[in-house]
Length: 416
Ligand SMILES: [Zn+2]
Image (cartoon, rainbow, N blue to C red):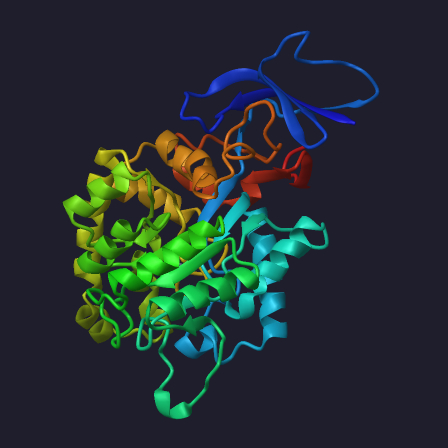
């Protein structure tokens, strides 16, 4: 059975302007033609299912560049690890994977999950057991003693391996990378920097030495895995870029030399900026006090972030949306708010922001040969939109107006 989508306005994800009156032919889950409607482009026959989208916009499925499937819209830090039995976290993650897919995200890169449930989830999705995006798993994070994810007090003597493996020194960090790879990680996620809301590791902290991160990157790359590094401050961003991690998550205070290094080495920047706005907008409703927000340096960080990311854009650094969703104040399902930030704050045009969320996301996942653009040979992972995202990028936040196709089959269909 082949599928012919006709009468489509195509945003193909390459950055090209939209094309009107297009036909897309799909065979065995892959695109075989994308272009103007014509006799040749529109075969007839009993084996062709025709879908007339009546001038609607068709674009590639989106990529969420920084997803935490196991985060159950948490309100407190203990909800990220202590309160997470593996069985329950697996169910939570499966529901979030389905939600992400229904929101138009046909691919996602994990940025860490408790008990490595994302690796099991990836397998279940690939086997067709459950619906979800094409996934790169990260499993547990790697973090130094006293680093950002090592937030449980020493006196509890937990010894748990919930969200993070605690490793110190190049050899132990290398061993931890081996362990997460053994547990199924495609992406080795490490914490080098701090965070505004965690007083034990403020924004400016750098919790790993250059030698430790070098060892981690060397091991991951030797095994063909990607490295994602949580960094915020100037020094942690510098260490990550010098080590050649594949992506820097946040890097709010990266200086100009680090930004130039990111560009020169072809690394990716995942700002995750929506998360910071969400704390300020919604945090007070969940017990984050005004005092905490002003003491944390969050407002200063947001001001700096806008400047850093605008400079990153001007330098031509590859940037992908991915917004750390999974907190009560920044819940799953609102992923495309991070794309809006690319337009409203960082200065991308809506078309450029869509390219960041599609083609650049595919590049981040090292899957650009299979997904991210609507071109012959790629998976038929696409969205049919009721409206024009170039006129209003917020359209991508309304899943009632997004029909989702993955591998040539509609997962949701919102039009007749
Ligand atoms: Zn994160």
